[in-house]
Length: 462
Image 1: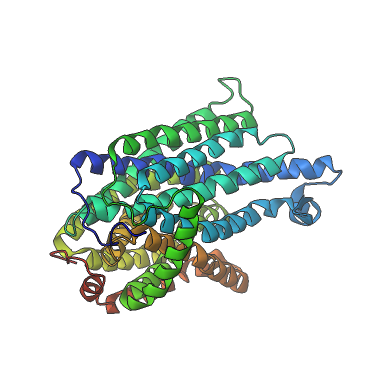
Image 2: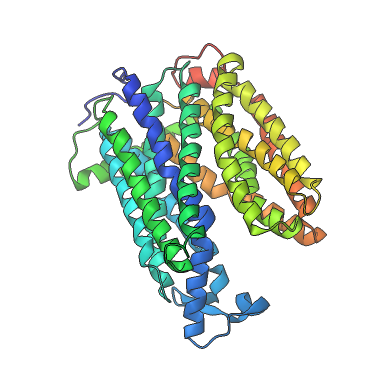
C-alpha cells in the first residue's frame, strides 16, 4: 500500500545534519586507505603462503606464484593470487547486494538505520580481521567479503542523503567538503597505523601482531566516527510503502525492477553515468598502480611509497575544497572537464619522471592528490542532480556497481600495454585515453536538460 509518491518534497535539513553527514566520509575512508590499499593485500598473501608451506610447499623466490598453492573453494590457486580473487569475488557480491539495498532504502526511507547497520557490520568485520593469523587466511577472506559488501551498502545509502541535505546550488560544496574530510580522516588514521606498524619493536609487537592491531584500530575508527552522522541525520521523506519484515525485501525487489524499467526514460542521466564510468576507471587505475609504477619502473624504496600515500591523502583534502570553490564559480561540469585535462597532464608527466628521482615522483603525487577527491566529489553531486526524487539510493547503487563492473578495464589496458612494450612507462601514459574519451563524451552531454528531464530544479551554474 503506497503511502507517498517518490518525489514527495523532503523536509528541510539543518547545518548540524550536513556537518554530521560529512563525518561519514571520515569514518569509512579508513577502510579503503589503511585496510585495502596498505595492509590487507600483503598480510593476507603472507598468511596464505604460510598455509601453503604448512602443506609442504616451497614458497620462495620467483616460484611463489607457480608452486605455492592453496585451496580456494575446492580449487588449487597460487597463494600470491588469493587477494586478487578476493577482490573479484567481493565486487561480484556488491553487484548482487547493492541494487536491492538501494531499493529497500528508497522504499522504506529508513536510511539512517540502514546506514548504521551497514557501517557497524563493516566495522565489526574489519576489526575481526585481527583473527586472521597463522595459516587461517580463509577467516580473513570471509571477513573481508562481509566488510567490503557492508562498506558498499553504506556508501549507497550515504550518497542518497546528498539531495536531501543540500539544494541544487549547495550540493557541489557539500559533496566536496565530504570528500575533503574523508581524505583528511583517512590520512590521520593512516598516520596512527604507521606509528603502530613502524614503531612495533618499541611496543613489543611482531610485524604480524602490529598489522592485526591496525585492523582493530580501523574497525573502531570506522564505528566511532559513524556515531556522529547517526546522531544528527534524520528521515526527510515518508516511506513509500508500509511493508514489514520479509515483505520489505519482496517490495524492494519489485521497486528495483520498476526503477530499472523506468531508467530508460532518463537517457541523459544514463549517458552521464557512462561518461563517469570511463574516466573513473582511469582515476581508479592510476591510484592503484602508482605504487607499482614507483617501485618497479622508478626503482623507489618502499618508504618513499608510504610517504607518497600520505601526501595524496592530505593534499586531496585541499584539492577537494578547491574543486568545490571552483564549481561555485564556474559550475561543476566545467570544473570536472578542467580536472580531466589536469589528469591528462599529470599522467603524461609521470611518463617523464626519471628513475630514482623522489622529488619528481612526489610532484606527480601532489598532482594526483589535488585532482583525486575533487573530480569524484563533483561527479557525485552532478549525478545527484540528474536522479529522480525518491529514487536516489537505487540510482546511486547503479552508480556504485557500474564503477565496480567496469573497474577491470583500466588495469587490463595497463597490463596489456606493459606486456606488449616491456615497460610501465607507455602503459601509464596509455591511461590518458580514459580521461580524453570520458571528457569528450561528458562535454557532449546536455547536463541542464538531463536535470530538467529528471524533474529537478537547475542550479544557477552547472
